[in-house]
Amino acid sequence: MEDFATYILEEKDLAQKMMITYYLSKKAGIYFDKSIVLKAEITKLFIEYMRLNVDENLVLTAMLLCNCKKVENSQKIGKLETFAKEGSEYLAELGFNSYFCRICEQINRYSGSTPRERESDLLEVVDQFTGLILNRVERTAFSTLEALVILQEKNFKYIDNRYLELFDRFVKEMENITIKENIDVPIIQKLVHLHNKEANVKTFIASIFNRYDERINEAIKKSLKKKSKKILEQEHQIEPTTPQKTATEKMKEIVESNREAAKEANRALFSEDTAQKVLNHKSTYKMEE
Image (cartoon, rainbow, N blue to C red; front, side, top):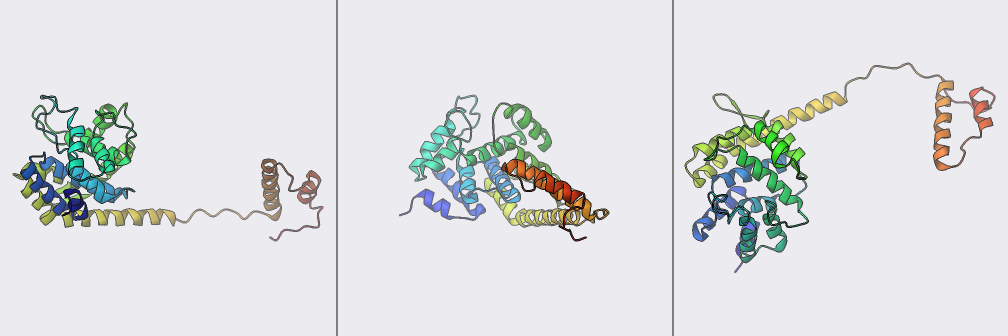
């Protein structure tokens, strides 16, 4: 009989992965709420829109499970510094290999695990960003752009995260890609709205994949098409014409270029005497106009 790790990793459909994790959470009591669904969806968009060179299936599975030993109000009961390590140990029991468990352990930096995996940096930046754009008991949610400033100026000010700049660019570009409702709503804002509106994990998953997944993909495709067209138009703009150079000017450029190359190669391509003869039209060598 296959273990749980093999089972969920072989499932490539994200909605089905989420439901598998949901039922595991009910059976095993692991942490899985609407915020994790939102984090996984933002991770998926980030990977696909920015064409990141990572194993998408692996990263999305890790995002769904890396908070498995987190608890509500973990800061108050002292679990904030230990849940990622405890989670990785639990995932090893479910059959995940050491690499996958290390990625999950490094969702935060409390365990001191090094070297950091690139997938962990990806999970980390999405995890912290999503936490900022959702309401908390002690504060209201930050806007997407406010959250980016906090990431840059506070959370990662003294920490190196290899995906931070790319993620900043991704979120800003997402602000210009909208879903049309009564008014045009940026994609991430729409996902946050659904998170806040839906009553539970199952209805949130259903709302994303039954009503909005295709619309989001179409909006992104349309945006990328416009972006590509704009780049092509810029590349094909006709540059102002410049007067044709005379044969003497062309030859002078060649000689000077050869002279510099000769210095670099520590050998002469033309002798100084030959070069002067060419420039003064005293050589029998002629260049075509």
